[in-house]
Length: 212
Image (cartoon, rainbow, N blue to C red):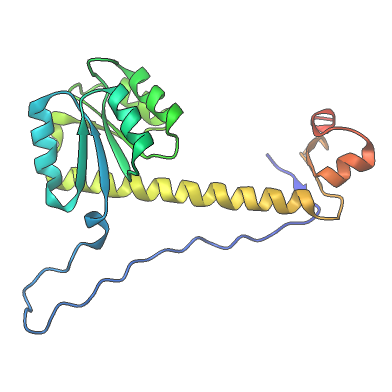
């Protein structure tokens, strides 16, 4: 919506990076070490032994994988240990369909979740991503490159989401506590925001001001 602030703060771009050590001169053909994956802890919630073997093999030794067979165990594991990402089968013995994802996300919203299924269902995939899943993977179509990339991208997207939320929370807190009267209006000159000091000046709550 269009509008303006009476004052504002310019929160600069979020920057990140990773340095890797150069290869030893005596070993010119040695591949560069993979720093990010070695410390990546994956919670795999999957009840099919064959799929567990396949996914574990695709991930390889670069990832630290903890596997549990059901949603109940997965929720408990996520509460007891720190994980970087969850690989979640939507169809488990104790939960089936998108509700499986919804339950886990509600209890652990801080975790990036990649949902998996043996079904190549575009509608389910779109619904899962719309509801907050980082990606939807079809088990029969996964290979090592695709899975590694999906895991890395999911973790990075979640990191950026957290950074944005933290930045917005900081900005909101700053605006709320400034001594100036700050408000914002839309194109129809209706209030869309007012800080605490402005509300106090009018003797109204924010809810009473919004939309007027």
